[in-house]
Length: 98
Image (cartoon, rainbow, N blue to C red):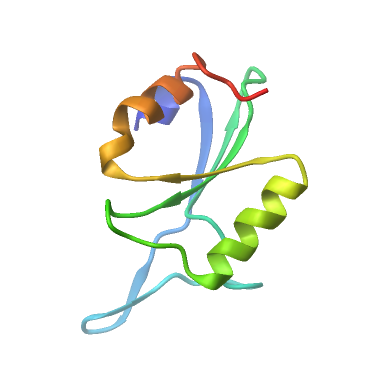
């Protein structure tokens, strides 16, 4: 994974198939929590990332998490396959937010 190569600790909650064709992400707490939490080992940041397809949209609960995370001073991002160059740049530490 690209994040690990650049020194990020990674937490990713994976969906599980609860019955044939039905997938859920097991959670305790409020729905909509981001897909990835990344914390850099040398102080390049803490990122909460929601992974979406190029056409995917945030649900209302995902929007609520995004707003709360940003308002509390952390970085929330929505990453899409088409953004791979910008994602790579961010993970390499070349454009850390202010």
